[in-house]
Length: 170
Image (cartoon, rainbow, N blue to C red):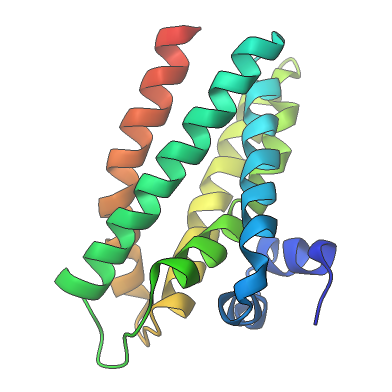
């Protein structure tokens, strides 16, 4: 079994076997939450949030919106657009998508002048690509296009909630 760091690196490099390992490890739920919290903390720092209260609220909202995205993805992926081999539960999607947030840690560099916005945007896009790989593996899709569609449908709702809060609050 890999360490947390190995899993974060494997997920960030889009290694399908890393996602398969996390999917199968029911004890990795807290690791997935930790990765989401680190990624969200990176986003908070990257946009200049410094107040402990504000960071706490942002972390709470990040976990809540991620959980809603997981639920949406589970519903869309298993009920609306299942593949022939699709068989997944909440925990499998929870763990794989939690680790797919690994690249988001780089959003902490979003505060840098000139390049910060590019780093923040690139890390966010990288997270989306990672999420697609996580969903493809968790839902046992043989077609990446199906995973992209499932992810985009859930992501729209997630993004509206998360960034709506972020930009309204700051």
